[in-house]
Amino acid sequence: MKIVITGSLGNIGRSLLSQELIKQGHTVTLISSNPERKMEIERLKTTAAIGFLAVSFSEADAVYCMILPNYEQQDQIEYYKIIGESYKRVILETKVKRIVHLSGYGALGKWNRFYSRISQEKQLSLATLVT
Image 1 (cartoon, rainbow, N blue to C red):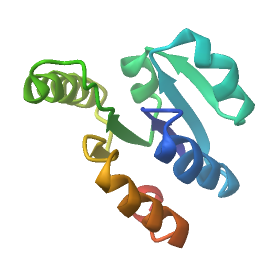
Image 2 (image 1 turned 180 degrees about the vertical axis):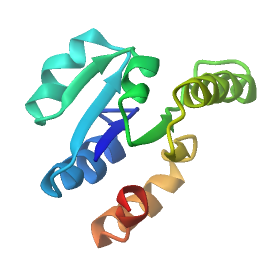
Image 3 (image 1 turned 30 degrees about the vertical axis):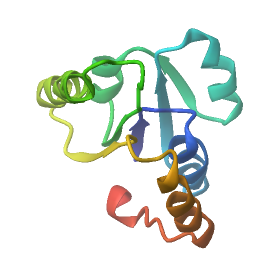
Image 4 (image 1 turned 180 degrees about the horizontal axis):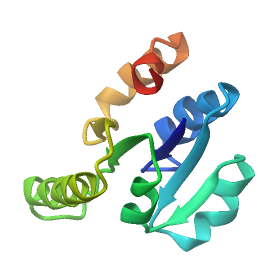
């Protein structure tokens, strides 16, 4: 399958998703808004797509939409709404059939211990994404 992952170099995108999916033989594209990350993304043996949601989604069998926290935003709810609406628009335009949507708002602080335990125990199942 062709799988697109946003939030490319975070904990989930880099280690849990992209590397496991590559091992399973899937083609993975990582989307980043930062052009300086292109080489690092390509070192992971994935395709780098810098800021191209619509083009990347249109070629995908499945997408993983991550909203990364931005604690500098004054109105967090509005920030998440804007990003979520962008994903929604592109998903509807491109007619992607398989979608996983996750917010990273609670991934730091006290929640980081919970996330670390989950990832260490490898309880994250990728089966629902690729089946």
